[in-house]
Picture 1 (cartoon, rainbow, N blue to C red):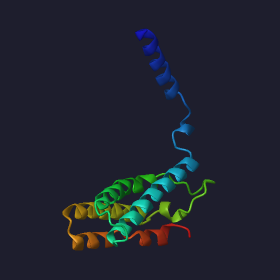
Picture 2: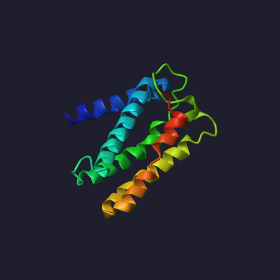
Picture 3: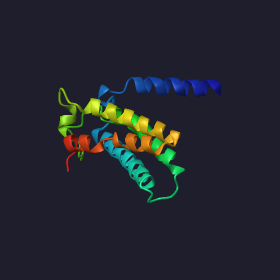
Length: 150
């Protein structure tokens, strides 16, 4: 039995090692779907947090959940755009400028990640002024205006 399991594992590893290099990169359509899902998560946490911060929803205990969720998703934003899908047929609202030489996108994504982390930390303090100030730092519009099709 142990031999059969080992043989199957070795065969699987050898098969995977011999796959063509064309399969090394993810399919553009899958990458775009993943990015869109990730950005939907960012949007959902941002909208939910906003409703809580504005007092439209009274469950203040959920602020930390949404701030932490936003911070976690923001950590993945830059990497989610690493694969250039500009020349693919995948349907996306991401502008080709994201991948252009000298693009500000990586810096803006890093700034967003840091701002989301600051918001998460501010929520944990319970200081309303600090939370408000940290929320202003998210700056989604600047990146969307520059790098997202309408």
